[in-house]
Length: 326
Image (cartoon, rainbow, N blue to C red; front, side, top):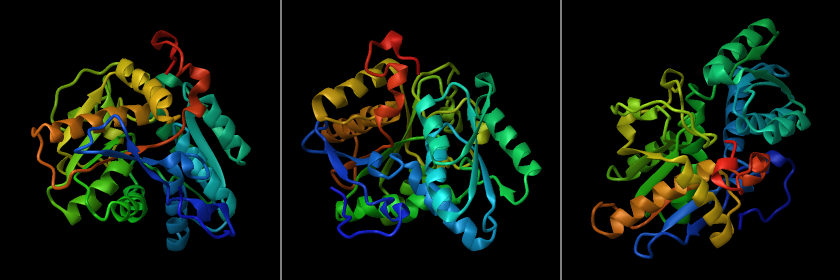
């Protein structure tokens, strides 16, 4: 359960302090624990950066009171920013590639934001370009830019990671997380390495994504169905620091799809594809450590389940693999 025991004045006060839950498919000797970020008010890990980044930008004056944010996003960041913007008196405009979740775009609009779609084939690079052009056309508008703003990993350094380490009394052997912006993993990795330089860090992406090129591997680009992590344009992912990563694991869509279904049927986790990819990678780290093939400073592996599968039901996540739209 969460630690919220008292009434709050604002929905923003409920961001964070999400549960850390054992993944039972992991070995008993080296358990995997997942941070369940769907317990946030906007139902994803991106609520953390929505609140943290906007509050810090208002404090610094970078974002004027009553101003506008224009952000390129696949959806969850838009929801997280929209939740925060509505409570902080900020107008929100989001630029979203067309193929991304209809549910997410509907929720952004419900929270009072404007949504602008860009062509799927232009990817996030096209959305980023359009966002900057829109911001130039509006008064008092800024682009928080989750892909390059250091406040993104800082949010996880200041909130997500301390919650994990407090829950496990600091005994964390490995950190495993998918990379979309890479903010979650980078913030947690920096926190973990400061506490123990031997903390093992695994970055996760779908097969076909190109983060591995930033880690020195020559991988082929291809389309993938897994949503919320991965990149087709590493140049836009400025937060990723290869020196904080011990390994980068690519997970096939078919394996991710199967794990989504297993997590629901066997463990009661209604989570989406990025969580399933994280789960597979984290279980693999734990199994290698349990077999003596990987030396961890502590016998616990931590990952993140970023959001809920409910936002992707229209894409057939619980049907057969071929019908999953991605």
